Amino acid sequence: MQTIPPGKSGKPSRRIRLDDLATACGVSIATVSRALSGAPGVRPEVVERIQRKAQEFRYALPSTLAGQRLLILASPAAMEDYARSQFTLNVMQGIEERVRLLRAELVTQAITSTEQERQTLAEAAADPRVAGLLFLTLDDEDMLTAARSSRKPVVLVNGDDPLMQLSSVAPSNRAAAAMATDYLMRLGHRRILFLSHRGRRTIERRVEGWRDRMTAGGTVLDPDLQMDLSDWLPDRAAEALKARISARGVDFTAVLCASDSLALGALQGLAALGLSVPGDVSVLGMDGLAQGAFFTPPLTALEIPMQHIGATAVDLVRDLSLGTHMPARRIELACRLVERKSCGPVKAGKTTP
Figure 1 (cartoon, rainbow, N blue to C red):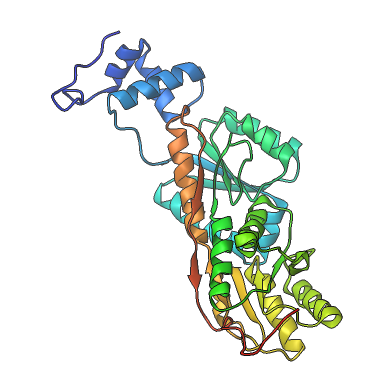
Figure 2: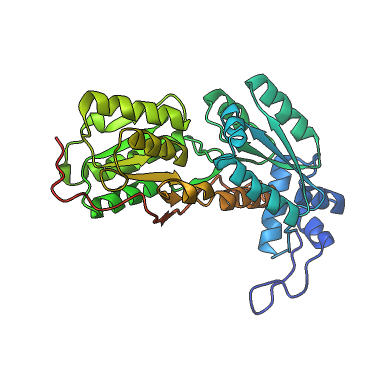
């Protein structure tokens, strides 16, 4: 095959055109154009060959999604969280802003069954306008299995694929929970109660981060320091905490919550029992929602870059749509501690069982 001779820098000696790529790959200009734009009708092995040759020649691939469409498939958990104006709302704002900047179109739909998902994937595969799909807060293994066969790029948002066949963007959940636990330990806390609503892999990473620090140095973790609730609603946390204290007393000096909503419930439950925060018990949340600044007292929290998660997911779809041979990747974004008034040192003389 004919190639363009490189210059002294190792790059082609003149600007590469579509007809150069067509000649080098032994295909038509129209085939090259379709392969680089993600349009249907080109065999996957031909698309990969053209894209590899484009990279070899330093051909300038398009950097926007102008005129293309992104599909968001939102799980019931995501829709419920969005309705509560919590984590998902902020992630969606990041997605929407990035899509506007890239001059693309966004289509959102709830996904409630594998059958519905497969139909949507088939329709997306047949639609040349669809650049890729974002699966929002999806953990169901049957749905992940279907998504792995997608002919268009799929990115999991606020989730991950345990088989690493699908790309994903999520917070650094394990590291964030470890950071929060370290912070409380520096304040002298050793009996740190962890409140969570289990089930999702991302939340399990938060449990693992707390457990990592609580068992550091061979310390035996008291299993009673982990409380699993049936929902993220604040009143569930408040009632559970009051019931625990009524039965066992205050056998902890701090509460680390897997979300800000549970932290709000913890604050309410402690206040109802006449316990001061942070004088008697410190409370730390995870999410960093803006309303945490208006809790009583203002909530110390691990702030998750929710809007950046959404924007990064869109960028990842764009990158994958330009190179179908690219391997799946898992992106985790760092979180930061926002210190307010709900955490303080262990009270002098405070002891726990």
